[in-house]
Amino acid sequence: MIFSKSTAAPGNLVDIPEWPIRFRELTDTAITPSIREFYAAGVVSGDTPARQVPFVAVDFETTGLNCREHSIVSIGLVPFSLDRIQCHGCRHWLVRPRREIDPGTIPIHHITHSDLESAPDLGGILDELLGCMAGRIAVVHFRSIERRFLDQALKVRLNEGLEFPVVDTMELEARLHRRPTGFFAWLFARHRVSIRLSDSRMRYNLPLYRPHHAPTDALATAELLQAQFAHWYKPDTPIRELWI
Image (spheres, rainbow, N blue to C red):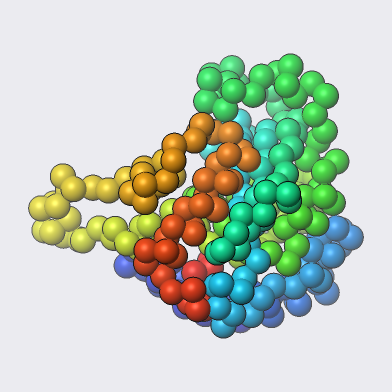
């Protein structure tokens, strides 16, 4: 596997795959047809200007934060570009978890047991989900949820995970509000800036939406990336400077 270096976390260099090459490798090794088709659709080259990149904002609601113990219960997708939200392509699925949801999480995502009684298993919508994501760069707010949960869910069902690049709007906010270290970290501790989705949107005067609703949070994430570009990034920024 070929990697490039990126400062994708404050003060740390991380290895990021050369995604077009990685997708070609994964096309040859994928077993599940829908996963193989997802990889075969390819991914834009790293030097593609962001203004030319087809994006899809992705948000999951889950029964908890541990991808090995908890499950996805709701998925929202919003295709977009830096210029336009493509509302006609927005999708929302409820999916049945492998274990009963914890009643304590219901007040957060407002998804009840009765909502999920007739919902399909994730495997039942996988072809459609991957078809909507194919050829697009996923945009998320906190990549550890969407990427890890989907990878783990497919490993459990298919013995085969999923790799894909993401642009993480939380990470982009972290780059703008990096914390100093040592003495200066202590000195400026009172000025900690929240990079949660709602707080990040407020800094750009974006409207408040209902939180923890997958399609709405996906829309909120898409709008946040557009605002980040309007304020901080040039439309011809190569996508390799953003994806992880």
